[in-house]
Length: 79
Image (cartoon, rainbow, N blue to C red; front, side, top):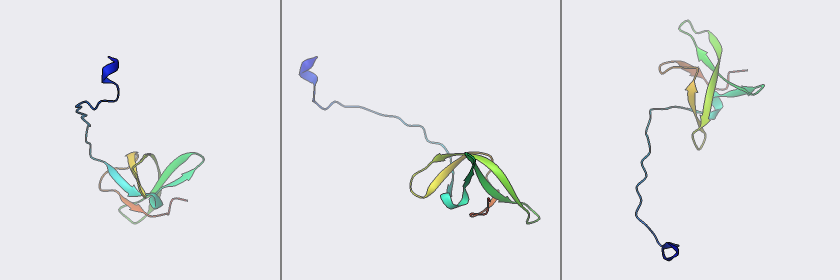
């Protein structure tokens, strides 16, 4: 109906919430189009692990896969 154009209408938008693993961008290195983080093992060894990321705003990214909660990451060490 053309009479409704430009008039505010009530609306309700629902969004799903989920737990996310957010890390500073400095923890993620991109090489050849793949993102990596450095995970520190139980014996102190550093392992480069490929991860899937998504922008999270600001200076952080969301880790979608590749590491788990409780993994220890080293900043800027994935070379």
